[in-house]
Length: 549
Image (cartoon, rainbow, N blue to C red):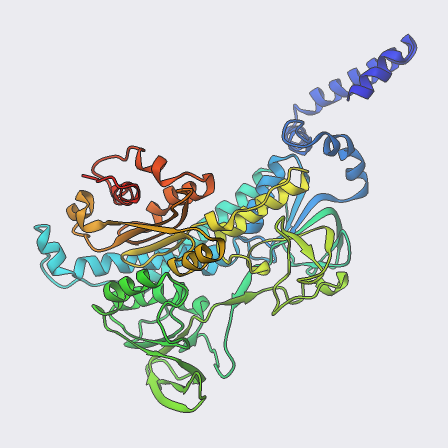
């Protein structure tokens, strides 16, 4: 711009007059066209498509017109789950011309077959559990006359309607901000090129972000019919409430669905290949969860076994069959017949048929290798491919919806020339059981290993829900909040909570990890009384030798 002004003033008066007339003509054209609806839309589109000088680097601003002439889009995003949606919104916010290949699945797994509808099932089933808990209600002075019942189809419809509402909101937000939503699936056709598989049309983009998400993993030997043997996709339909359901896997997904099923009257059997339940959880929290979420409920489990063969049945007529073998010896140990089997053995990247081979990208079990800036590499040890990024489940760095969104925003930041790296140890996670489990940073086991490797001493402090006035008022005194910290720097390295509204409480801790806030600083911060967050206040104060009242 400075060079333009310098050249302008060096020009003769004749040139200045010509430029002035041309500029005036353009302004008058815009004013006259703005009076029509199409003109107004065009004016708004031009506003959104004009790069903003403050957020984008000067180099990006000065070359934007050249890019527009070379490529159809500044940024193209393959996939429209939470990660792709977040990247698209941020790209438009930076004035980049953006398109999303939705694959006819706006919202992706989270909105349509995951986080969102499962929370609806948990909310409805949780109400049923609470209303059937006579001792809990009695302690609050409440007595219900008659039997508590529920409408299975109504509960299922609640989940479906919520998913459709959120999906519609996401799509409207994209269109409202001027994102081009291309319904087909995007397939890479080499550098800067993507084909719409629905129409065959090839689009070009300066930068491409891969966000294809993931699909449920079905182990060998397991036959899925999505009726009596189903993944989380089928479970969310809640076609029936089985009397006895086996859940293969005891991670986040399996644990949440055990909560739903037992609240609605099912008996549950966990089948876990590892020698412990909830193998990825902090061990102390896992033990608390077993005491609070497993033992009081109609749940049993088989540990250290594989479901080597699962055969579907017929709902209401023939049971599904599960043959189990020892995880170590591979010898047959047991065969059971149940009304339904849910396969909750994790997820795998949905990168098949994405055209990765067109850029010679080698995957590891389908996962795309990326560097810390989300730039795609040809392989784990390979070179970075210019102008290509991969976010979310497809890169396997952290398979959480909000992590995908953070990675998408980070990728756009790097596209705009502002270096950014997501601190994944500051990204929280939650399991929405009743009560909830939440965590951020390292587990205690991981923290012990890191402290030994790096030569610092690990500190640990705990707050208790049984000492919290708000939790006691709710009749929810079970649970703990555990804070792990570096004794030398006093910085928080991990927090784990099990208790009422743990998923909401963890955000304060996530912010502390992200900002590098010390436990001493946290101990002096005032928490509202009486609130559940005082459980954390107790832990923070305990870390530095203070007492919380």
